[in-house]
Length: 239
Image (cartoon, rainbow, N blue to C red; front, side, top):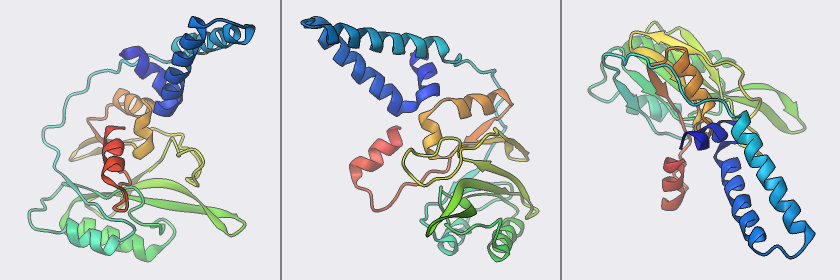
C-alpha cells in the first residue's frame, strides 16, 4: 500500500512494525473499554498514526529510462579484500562491469590508508571495471573505540575514486557513525548509479531521491554474515 511506504519513509520498517503492533493493542483496548487509560491509549495511537500518514512524503518518483545493459558482478566476503579481489577476477569479467563488494568488505579505510587505496585502484584499472567497495572512514575516538562512518567508495576504470556514499540510516544502538546527508548519482558508462547501504532499504527515501535525480541502477551493498542462521538470512533478504 502506498501509504505504508510513505510512513516507512519516516520511521522505517521497525517503526512501522511498532505502529501496527500498537494499533492492534489499541483495538484490543477499544474492545474492552473498562477504564480511562484505555480510551487515552487509543486516542494517542490514533493521533500518532494520523500524524505519520499526513506528514509522510509521497511515494511517486519520475520514471527514468533503463540503462541499455548494466553488467554486475557481486562478491561476498567479510573483511577480506584479498580474497574478494581474487573472486572478482574470476573468468568472464568484462570491461565496464560494476563489481560490488558488500558492506564492511574491509574495516580498513582506503581513503586514509594509501596502500589499500592503490590496490583497489590498480584492480579497477587493470580490469577496466567499476569497483564499489563497502568500507569505513575513521574520524576520532571515544575512549578505546574508534569512531567511523559506514561508507561505500566507487572506483572508475581509470582507478580514480569517482564517488563516496555515506549510509543514511545507521542501525540504532550500533556503532555505525554519522548518517549521510547527500544522495549522489554517479554517471558512468555502466549507467547512472545510485547507492544505498543495507539498512537504508528499510526506508524509502534513498531509493526515491536517487531515482528522482536520474539513477537507472540502484546498487545496495549489504552485510550478510556467514555466522547467521538460515532464518536470519531469509529475514535479511525480505527486509
